[in-house]
Image (cartoon, rainbow, N blue to C red; front, side, top):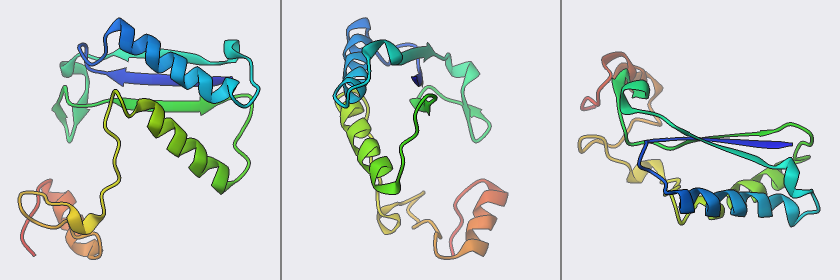
Length: 131
């Protein structure tokens, strides 16, 4: 049984949005022959004082946790296909994007992905520093 937990700020989704998202998620499974009643989608609103990033409260988040309890996706290609379909389900409601690291900027600096020691220093100081 697939269990989808969506943690979000209080005002992120309307009741209509939740209905549409849950219908689209359910269709991912019914389209491959699973019964709709297997699919559980839980929307959990979280107040900003209860969600922290870098030790600081935030209301700029959506966290999705998917558990495939009864069946597993058997191979890497299947997992990739599922992830792409899932992103398409959420796309009208949230923005999911994988940006190439050389296109990132943190305070005007390219993150030091290729320089693990510098990245560790960023983590230690919890801020971007020139390198």
